[in-house]
Image (cartoon, rainbow, N blue to C red; front, side, top):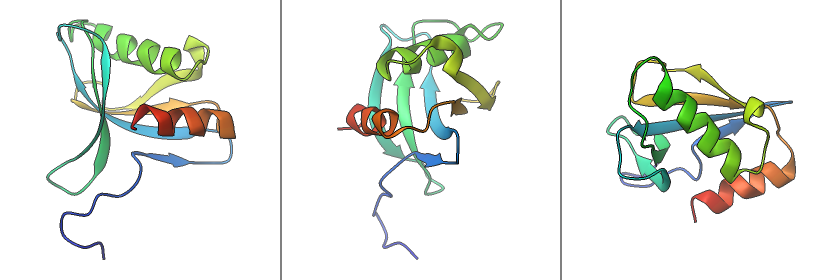
Amino acid sequence: MRPQGCMPDTAWSVAADAVSLTVRLTPKADRDAIGGLIQMADGRTVLAARVRAVPENGKANKALAVLIAKRLKLAKSSVTLAGGATSRIKVLRIDDASQATLDRLAALVE
């Protein structure tokens, strides 16, 4: 069991060929940005992100995938929504589990 108030290190987990990234998305923001790690009330650690796109017809979800792909220097098609289409909490699948991608993910939260 983790001590009270202690945050786990990451909002992602690594499988053999992909990374699963949990994000709390704020749509209709003043700019597209990554905000760093935050701890949810249930104890999960997520990456905070915001996009200018509206949450209609998947526009905000697509903008999030594009933002993450750009920041990780990956092709847009490498980042897809794996869960949370209508929720603020999203799970993204990143089809590149290389050390370079993991290093860039770690740099996003520093």
